[in-house]
Image (cartoon, rainbow, N blue to C red; front, top):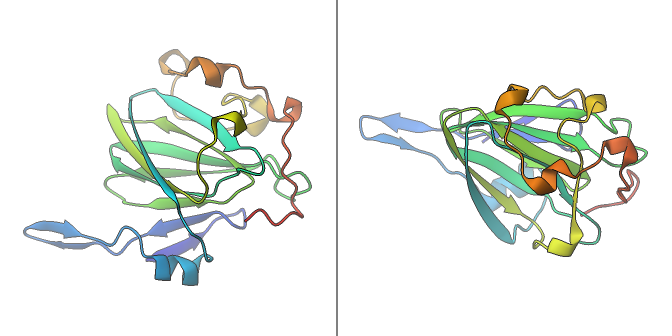
Amino acid sequence: MNVIETEIPGLFILEPRVFRDSRGYFYESFSQRDFDEKIRPIQFVQDNESMSTYGVMRGLHYQKMPYSQSKLVRCTKGTVLDVAVDVRHGSPTFGKHVAVVLSDENKRQFFIPRGFAHGFSVLTDVAVFQYKCDNFYHPESEGGICLTDPDLEIDWRIPAASAILSEKDLTYKALKDSSIDFRYEDKLY
């Protein structure tokens, strides 16, 4: 596994070693040992999967304390633009984001620690999105930021007329108007 550091410390892109031959391909999609050595020790407790069509935008979601989650995300069919936004008050990168194209072709994964809001847009006809979480989902702990917050300057690569958002995602406020309880100095895991 090749680990690529991003411009925001703590966010990592993971590229697996893919072995191809006339039969197809094989790769190790996750190794606890490698992850603990190359990223940090973690215990994932829940795997999730979603299927979406072109133009769907999901996010920018996070779980409030004490149920915050780190995520290891990937796209197993199609292509998505995956985005993580730093929402840790006091962080030198507060409000900044990293965007990564994840696809069934590049097989990249994106590690997003606690203290970040997460979302993605679907760039192909269909996308199957999978992710591991290090904490269980608690519906009462849901939080979010407006996907189209102009201060975040995210290019979702979807024309506004084609964007499909859930009713819930349409209710989220801009980052500056949100009451997020993450602090940069807190150890979040």
